[in-house]
Length: 270
View (cartoon, rainbow, N blue to C red):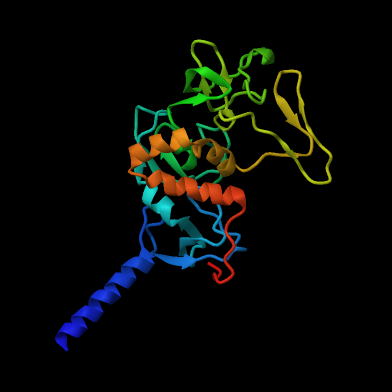
């Protein structure tokens, strides 16, 4: 009887470990492992991709959700090529005027980012997955290095333009030092296309400074654009080697989100 009680206790502890988990992104509460419905509108607070039909970790009190693979991959502190002087720590953005120093897009107040507070640097968790160097079919002769965009000069026409989409290269982008070719991260595998909003009839039109002005146009989400790049086979090999295959699971989530999720008629709302 004593043996059976010990065995039952061991099984209970195993189930508790499997269904509950803590993570540095939300240390104030335990996260519950749950199944999300195929129509769920929740998004991961780390990578920004959805949960439709997937399993994730949730704090119902705070309406906080993260993918299980993201919890495995994104650590409390990292080093990054964009800021080699200091490590970056995962934390919440305290003000509403911050932008990611890698991609240049907004880091909304309260959202998670990798930060160097003394230097005022913020990087989206997903942007930390971008490699320091990459190759592109748009410029197959040389490897391109990730470099910061220079401050805009007085003459707009002298700004660096992406050789893929023609828009201004802001934040960090990929550049060939030998040829001067510059590409956005999301353009490395082919120039991105602006998608018009249904019924607007608007198209992207180039401005006089070589940039792009959008009239009724809608960019795909940051997660899908970055995901399309880092999902390439060559990138997977490098990520798997560096992260003991943890990155592949995150990349799979981005692929599922771009494809519209998974149908799961039997799943419950997370």
